[in-house]
Amino acid sequence: MNKGQLVEEVAKQTSTKKEAQDLVEGIINTIKGSLSKGDDVAISGFGTFKVKQTKARTGRNPKTGETIQIPAKKKVSFKVAKDLKESL
Picture 1 (cartoon, helix red, strand yellow):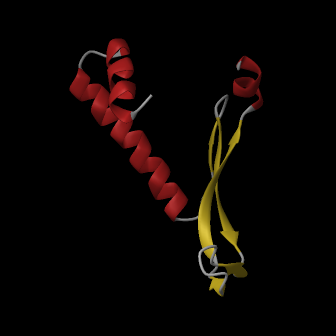
Picture 2 (cartoon, rainbow, N blue to C red):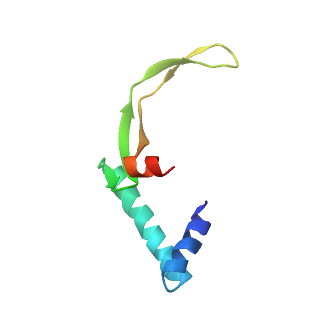
């Protein structure tokens, strides 16, 4: 399911497609904003989004075999809630 399909499914439960699009955009922007501040986002029955810091490490260029430094960075992880996991 992509974003457009999600909007269409939400529109079936609300009055208009525009309203559903605003709702989906609002939820996504709120999650993005919280994650960019470093906060976790926990949605009961769905899962938890967390920002994790990776350490700098040494890697290897697979094409040339040359050793390279991979810098530290932030990444988003998602842990599925028990309810959702059991429903699959």
